[in-house]
Image 1 (cartoon, rainbow, N blue to C red):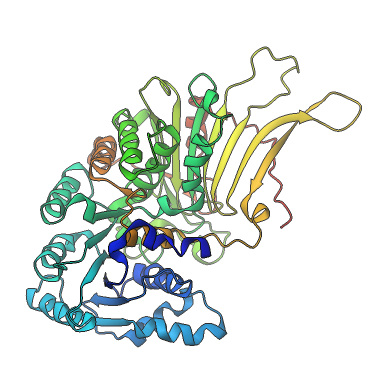
Image 2: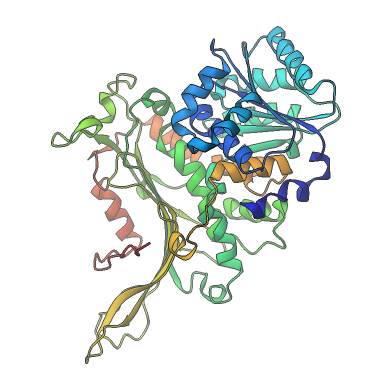
Length: 502
């Protein structure tokens, strides 16, 4: 972490010596409790916050800083001997109660901020950890009441960025009328994950991959996000959006862009985002024949939440057809990837927690080993146990020349013992302080992503397509495996990754 400490001064000279105010809208919510305050604490603990930084919580709830400290406690990473430092961190925190639509309440918040900085030059960062239905009044009040007149102003917007092309365009138009694009940080926390960031170097920093990273050598690309938990506790929220909006349209599509994009001229934010937009513009809306939708049901033989299906949640309508599992096949219509399927798969209440990119190569031509050679695969495991490994064939030890599956394995916690990998939000918060937009979604990226999925979503919802039932804790609907096989993904079941001894 010491290597990161100079980064705040490296990016921007106008960060040094100024007061900073980090305003958390929705300070009483889950995101603030589980991610925002714990992340700010980690940055403070490791000396990565600007020297003069005040954290102001704002919400409608009647709470105090002591309540925030208590509720964030289970998610805070600290040792007993760090208690004095934690006390100092919370001494920088304050809380203002108010409405999201009241100009008078925002005037009170402004007076509170002015009192904190005591009239000095300040930079203002606003985090919208809020439901999308209040984005418009909050951003309007930020613009009219809270903007720093001399320092910079930056707004972090959490997903979902609308529900389809129209609602996203309306929201984007509203926010863009108040702030410049370089002030808007649309956050997708997956872009801050270690292995997602590693994709750029893996692809463009290794000569061995360049000649084979195309349709001539690659059979298919499979991008997977699996969670072993259901939606209990947030079923009402989830039912409004579903798994496609929650995961596929953002996290998985961003991963696809990093796999498929051309080499940018530099590592600058605009150069990288330009290449991602080119990929998105080359993707058509998926057709229903290339979609599998599922909804989990309880496992009567299990215990706890696994006994409950999605519809057993009291906040979910009994006749809900919202999918909790989705698998789709996308195609990037350009010279590098034409006719190569990109399989994107995501679901809740599945058999494991996993996020990975699996690049499966074509069969070796001219087989001389009587069909015993399996396809090579390059796997980038995003979580858990971050790793890059290549599945390959080698000779089985012994007197015979027998091919056997093995791997070249780079498991990060084995190779980099003792190194702490920052959480995604840590990286992204530093990026915002530094004015670095590489890992944030640009407006035209967002527009293209919604263009791809909006027609599909309207068909699913307009036709009330019923998802396939799958049991809590399973791999998902069997129809998903059939869809993968239809598009050339080969699963043999003969390879078993052996977890290295750490």
